[in-house]
Amino acid sequence: MSSATPVPTSAPARRLPLAGVLRVGRPSEIWFKPALSVVAAIAPPNLTLLALGRLDLAMYTMAGSLCALYAHNRPYAARAGTLARVVLGMLGGLAVALVAASLTASAAVLVTVGALLAAAQKVLCDAARVGPPGNVVLTFVSSASLFAPQTLGQVPGHLALAAATGAWAWLVCMAPALVRPHGPERRATAHALKAAAAYADTDGTGEGHARTRAAGYAAVHAAWQSLLATDARSRTRRGLERLVVRAEVALAAPTEADAGRLRAWARSLRGTGPVPQAGLPRAAADELLGVDAARPLWTRLGPLTPLALRTALGCALAGYASLALGIGRPYWALVTAASLYQANIALTWSRAVQRVVGNAVGVLVFAAIVPLAHLGQTALVLCCLAFSFGAELLISRNYWLGSVCVTPMALLITEFAGQQKAGELVTERVVDTVVGAVVGFVAAVAVTNRRAGDRVEHALTTADQARERAARLLAEPDSDPAALDAARRGLAVALIDLRATADAAAGEWWQRALPQERVVLTEQSGHRTLAATVRRQGLLPDRGAGTENETEDVRP
Image (cartoon, rainbow, N blue to C red; front, side, top):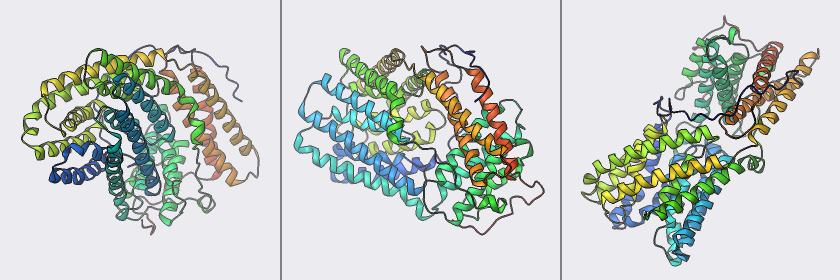
């Protein structure tokens, strides 16, 4: 174990930052994939309903079509299962909402059902790690459906519409596999190489090197998870595995890495060309197994209990407050509250600010565009498609920018069943947004997460044990290469988890001071051990070898 004594050098974070909350970043490298997919998933069903004169049913087709926003960063083998589960989850929430709407007209009861659904959706999405947009779309669908006029006899037909469009969304998202079957794995590997190159540029000591190193290891771990998502070890996958190992080695020994070559390898992974040859020692190339650190779903539910309580309480109180103010659409306040909850209080505050600003600008955009949308139902559908594309274009730059498009799109959806007074819609949306954000954040502060410090201690213990295991193998003159490789990757995963756990805990309130000094010391000793293992394994690159033109015939 580490000899460092835990030193509580940091008090619980109580500052609520404003600087940087609205800063616009770079767009996601694959922003166009969810953007084009959601347009392709929405357009045919809505245009069909338009031709049939039944645009009032668009709310149910939109429920299935919006599933096209998910899983674009996953390999196609894993994407198929993830999308299927998202569609089933959407159908489950929609079914509960429609049945509840048909059985009671009590707005308070419906808000309660919506809050419980939102909490379940939040926990399950986070535990299953479905990725963006997480629970927000599912909560939007189920919450809006709670307040749609409904009878029990209509429920099967409405669910059938959502199921059909959900299946269509699944096909839309899986279609690119016919053209570029290894695209997600290639992108994940390229990202790991670029992140490792960024750390190599710091020589392991430059400004911000610790954060750059953490980002690099997170990218490498994500690349391994992408490669491990399929059982088939094709020649393409073996080539990508070697490149990920090269990224790992660069992170462990940045002063001996060639950042230019790493970036050249990353560039060569674009398109469908051959995978570059990393030139690993033969013994190492035969032992590429990666590390699958995924824990069973049920083991990830426990730590999410405070998040579930925050979501249920915040959504319920936001809905009740909206009802008390006489707003006709309390589900807007409920969805606003559900969208806030992040890993800690600090991040939740940032999301609240982004949500309020984005929605405020979004209602102004809606007010400006509504005369065009009211020209006819065709214009209404086209405006909705344009905003759905714009939302995905902007949301990866900052959440508030995406909300600028999401807000008018949501308001336009309410008009599928008939035109409404624009001024009334705008007023209600602004009030519900403010109510949802304020009440939701207060609920997040009220429900404490005192176990965050315990999780840091557990992550420290795990990292110390992983380092000791690697050190023992290094001390053996004839240690098993496969065991040493597994120990190295296990230590890397433990350090990734430690950094993520410490960052999440640092943004929580009402807890004991965190052992920040011990975290830093554990990270430093762990990374020194990682560097020693790559030297022992003979994985350091030959800086005199070829560059980006060095490839092997490994086609996708």
